[in-house]
Image (cartoon, rainbow, N blue to C red; front, top):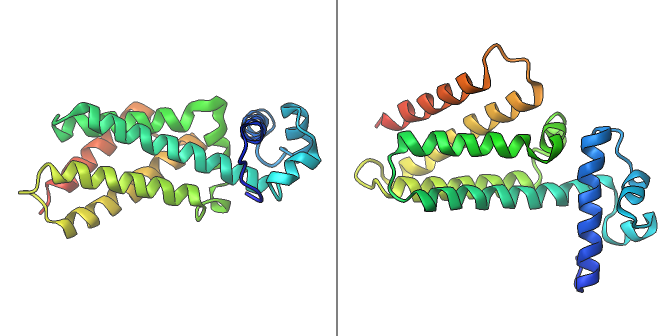
Length: 198
């Protein structure tokens, strides 16, 4: 962001801008969303938008950052709430949460994922990886007799990259020769099989 909002009124304006951006992307698509359209939808002038953001991409980056933080927190809450349930129950729940989040908000994530090459190195991607890695550490630390710390790091990295990338490709392209339910089962089986390896 060009200028982080300090006062409550400024925070409300930024929230309106981000909410309008999400609606515009869902309605017009990422490429056809423009700052004037965001201004019209939000009721915030183009000049005021530029006080906080340099361009449309910076608005999208902030929106992605916030949504990634929310998804990461939801995943942590899910894992914490479930207590000591077995991994073969926890992993399908986490995958279900991920799919639901990617398809939420009137297709916002789906539209952004079609252009993920522009955002794959964004702060949003780093935030998601951080949360997922912390969840992996927490989950695997409940089974310290199975894995040491280095194994947890390596396994978390592989699981996060392979699973999240597959989910992103599936929801954004939707031309796979497998149903969503089948994919969820296969991902769960793949993760569980990988974790059973020493």
